[in-house]
Structures are given as structure tokens and as C-alpha cells.
Amino acid sequence: MTQSKLELADPVSGKKAELAVHPGTIGPSVVDISGLNKAFGAFTYDPGYGFTAACDSKITYIDGDAGVLLHRGYPIEQLAEKSSFMEVCYLLLNGELPGKAELDTFKTSITHHTMLNESLLRFFNGFHHNAHPMAMTSAVVASLSAFYHDSLNIHDPQQREVFAHRIIAKIPTIAAAAHKHSLGQPFIYPRNDLDYCSNLLHMFFSVPCEPYEVDPVAAKALDLLFILHADHEQNASTSTVRLAGSTGANPYAAISAGVSALWGPAHGGANEAVLNMLEQIGSVQNVPKYLDMAKDKSSHFRLMGFGHRVYKNFDPRAKIIRAMCYTVLEKLGSTNKPLFELALRLEEIALKDEYFVSRKLYPNVDFYSGLIYSALGIPRSMFTVMFAVARTVGWVSHWAEMISDPAMRIGRPRQLYTGSPRRDYVEIAQRSR
Ligand code: SDX
Image (cartoon, rainbow, N blue to C red; front, side):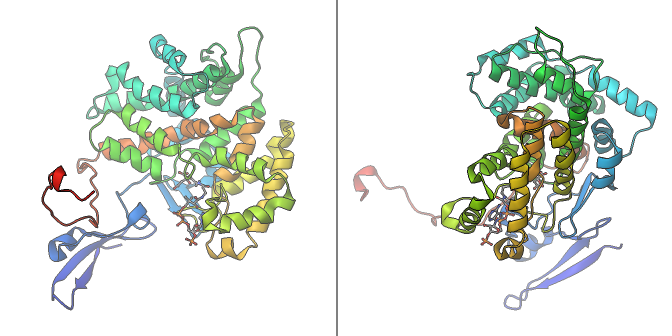
């Protein structure tokens, strides 16, 4: 598609601007608004960046109206059915599906970066026993820069690759250490004979006093959940990583900023909030009462796991996770079936309700995922950490894409100023307050 132009004219002042329009491979074009300020001295105004393209990217494409999600062009449904999390990591980082030798080399590299420096491991003992695991995770991820100085030079492609493999490899070890600290149990070291998800489950659930066998059904379910959470375009935490990274901050600090942004209940914290909400609702009889609360702005109650800034159709990931619930909960003998049935009924009732239909509020990735994490034995407080484990590859991929772009500039949004006009200082004796 060729580039076109947008003519803008102010009939009052007679000022004109010609704005370049850039087409994407697929999806909406973008209007380059830099000429707007030159011509009219104005900024664009888009609180929450709902209609602003902050960058161009080749990693993920979302069509919110059609419920489409592509990673490097591959539909999420096909990756979920045919790929593995390690293969999706390679794809997101490198842009192409790996050959067998490339995938084996990649997996070997990840496997050999899973251990944490012993001094770093001792950080966990400094946290209070009831510290939220996301607090521990964000702190320890940022602290990686204090230990691994051979991967801080953001201008060196080789150091960028070492960073990428190191953080993807260590984030499960950090998650497991946070979990073990919360339990007061000894840390369990990673094993090089286990695959990525089996290793995480081993570090979570092994104890020194007896053998632990990872359930392959659980490992496969986790692998699929991680594929579904790996990346999602310019979401809040990924945009945070890009903004932090654009200052030249070290990559571990940028990823730690992403962990913190993900924590909020409007974002990655929703999976934990959904389970709390389902338990609060308790039974189908209470659903109408809670839907009324969700419609009443003064209640400050929202239907967690519902709605999305981009998807105005079913989140394709939610559909896949809902289907997983039917098989995985059965196979794992989960006690979550009543909550799953409640979630299904809640979805069914909400999607017939005008408030939700008119606002195009559908279940998102977080609505069903907690039911599976819980069936795997993962405590609710760890759900958002699991999201962070999976999303780390997405954050790293976007960070690397930005850092390797020669045109990269520090991110610095502007504002509409609505405060006081200029005024002079008043001595305290003259103040009326
Ligand atoms: C993730 O961006 C991503 O890609 C994120 C993510 C990823 O993979 O990175 O997909 C992961 O964060 C999923 C979203 C998880 N969050 C939740 O499930 C929390 C509950 N959902 C919402 O708070 C909300 O839907 C957001 C935050 C997800 C989206 O917020 P928006 O786009 O700012 O939507 P909005 O607040 O402008 O809502 C539009 C209307 C409003 O009503 P009106 O002012 O038009 O009357 O819909 C209402 C909202 O009050 N609304 C809800 C609602 N979500 C929106 N009302 C009740 N319950 C809800 N969940």
C-alpha cells in the first residue's frame, strides 16, 4: 500500500497542515501528527492512548473487532494447537519459527541460565513471610542488574541476547523462590533434565524429603497457558517496558517496571481478582445482584475478567482457556468445577445483558485462567506472577525491537495543561489560608 496524505485546514485561522498517512501490513494506517504541532501549535489528545500508535512493530497484531491475535503472522489458535512455549519464545524473539537445530540450541541455552546467584537467592529471606509474590518478583528482577554485568550494554547485540535468554530462563526460578519463601519451605534448584514448564512445577512443588514427579498433564496445561500469555502488542506493561527502556535504563530495570505495571487489577492482576470475585458471588442465584453492582458506577465493582481496551469481541485466548477448563480440570481431578460452572453461567447471563452487549464486554484472557492455575495447585497470590513469567518473552521482544531501532528516541508524552496561569509568590504572612 502506498503512503498517502491527510490535509487539515483551520477555517478560522486559515492554517493548513499536510500529514503523512503510513499504511501497516494489515490493520489500521497511522497518521503522522508531527506536522500538526508545527502548523497549529497544538498537541493531539488521547488519554489512555486508546487511539495512539506509540511505535511500529512486527511482533504481534490484534484485530479487536474480529477477535484476531497473530504472533509474527501466526494465528494464536494454531500456535496453541501445534507449538510449544519455547518455540513461541524463539518466534517472538527472532521473527521466524525455528528449525529443529535452532530450537534445540535455544532450549539448551535457556536451560543453562535457570540458576540464580546464591547471594540473590538470599534476597528472598529479607522479605516478610507474607510479602506479595509480585513485590518480591519485581524487586528481584530489578536486582538482576546488580549481579549480571555482562548483559547490561544495550548497544551490544550479543549482550542483548544473553540478557534475553537469562531473564526468560530465570523468571520461573524467581517465581518459584517467591512461592517457596511464602511457604517457609527451602528453595528448590532447577533441573537441567526437565523442560521449561516441568522445571517450574518441580521448583514450585518439590520438597527435599520426598521424590516429586511432575504430572505431564499439568506441564502441558502450563505450556499452553504460557503460549496464550506470551505477548499482546502494546498493552500497559509492554508499553511501560518500552518507555522505561527508551531512557537507556538497563534491561532488567525495564522488565521490572513491566512486572510492576502488570500487577494492577485492571491488567495482569485481574486473574487473581476473578477467583476472588467468583468466590464472592458464590452461586448462580447471586449473579444478577453482582451484575447490577457492575452496572452501578458508584459501587466501584467491576466484573473482573470481562472487558478489554482492544477486544470488542471474544478474546481468542479466553475461548482457548475455556475449552482447556473442560479437559484439564477433569484430568487433574480439580475441585474447581463448581467455580468453573459458575463462571460459565456468569458469562452466559452477562452476554445476554444489554449493558455488557452494548459495551461489547466479553471475557478476556484472565476470566478462566485462574481456574487452571488453581487446579495446578498454584496459589491465587501467584497467578499474576505466572502471567509475568509468560509475558517476560513479550516484554523482552518489544524491548529488543525498540533498542535495536536506530531511530529510537526517549519516550516523552505531552499534556493539556489545565492548571493555574502564571502567578507571583505570596509571603506566608500575606496568605489568606
Ligand atoms: C489484560 O491491553 C491488553 O492487551 C491487556 C491484556 C494483555 O494480554 O496484556 O489483554 C491483559 O489486562 C486483560 C484485562 C484484564 N482486566 C480486567 O479483566 C479488569 C476488568 N476490566 C476492566 O476494568 C476494563 O474492561 C479494562 C480495564 C480491561 C478496559 O478498560 P477500558 O478500555 O478503559 O474500558 P472503559 O473503562 O472505558 O469501559 C467502557 C465502559 C465503561 O462504562 P461507560 O462509562 O461506557 O458507562 O464499559 C464499562 C465501563 O464502566 N466496563 C465495565 C467493565 N469493563 C468496562 N463495567 C463493568 N465491568 C467491567 N469489567
